[in-house]
Length: 216
Ligand SMILES: [Zn+2]
Image: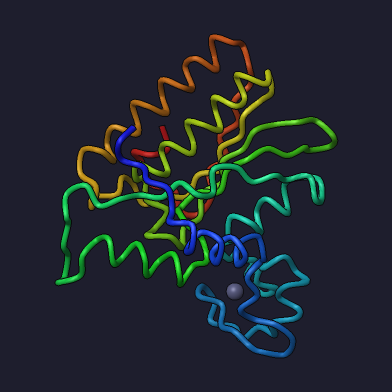
């Protein structure tokens, strides 16, 4: 694989320190507005209600770590491959911003290295490999690093003889990486076919919002 590069050790250590912590943008008595019914919600009640609007039951988007925390046994999740990041194979520039700069900016804003968090954990003490996408990182789009991480999670399932769960939330392929991005679909599909051959269960969890394409 030529597309993935390791994060330089300096940036890696600083970002891995930040990672793993659940972001808490609204705490205590801070108010926020429900995008659906426009009701003002108190941050504390809203968190207690698992980020669901108490008036109209609107479900707010969850970050990858929040979803992992909800899904798996507490403290059972071990993150893998968090150092895999995308490069800019096309020197892509959009609205006078280079894709490489955009990636750097997203990594800082979202506190994630890429749009998916992968690893293994247990649910009700049953082990499984999982890949959980995060919509905040360039719309959860499927770039080469996302595809590589998902593929590795599936391969881990095959190697360890455990089920695989993929929680998708994505706007589609990451156009900034062109064909490298489209290629990821073939790669992940091939890995899933191998998983099926090994007669291991695959769970696809579709979360808000998942558009076509990457869903496959
Ligand atoms: Zn509401």
